[in-house]
Image 1 (cartoon, rainbow, N blue to C red):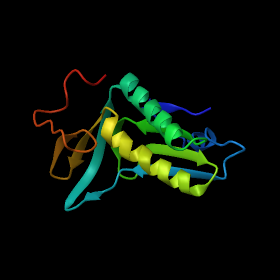
Image 2 (cartoon, rainbow, N blue to C red; image 1 turned 45 degrees about the vertical axis):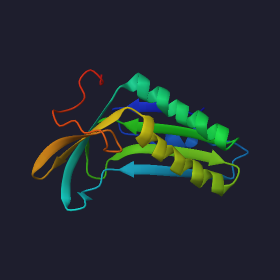
Image 3 (cartoon, helix red, strand yellow; image 1 turned 120 degrees about the vertical axis):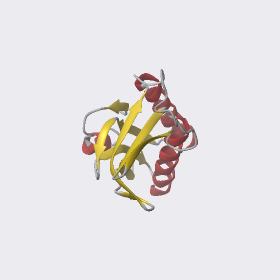
Image 4 (cartoon, one colour; image 1 turned 30 degrees about the horizontal axis):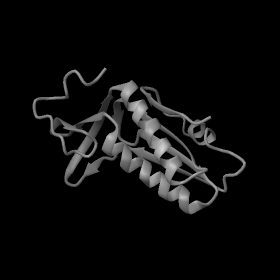
Length: 153
């Protein structure tokens, strides 16, 4: 059984991978997104993710459906963590199972790019010398007055 979840708990990577395993799969690709310490010259201390969970999970499911339309027979599960995360914490896990490896790589890449485009998850960065809500995950919608009001739960 595949799933598409937003969670404040640590993500069980093996459970996400296990959810896509099936007998026709010859490849399973897992993408694990972690909090990195440096973005260019800026040193990150931690990140905080917030989401509108029901809408975010609906969009994660939509990504799974898009993948299944583009690459029939591919199974996808996506789990994204919210809350305050430290350096090297796992923020997102994508597992994709497909008959052949090419679809697995392509679908996994597609999933992370679509998450950044359509899933309502917002990020606040805490640096050694400040903090800022950077807006959506493409960082194209800034929130200079703070996080988006009324959009999170």
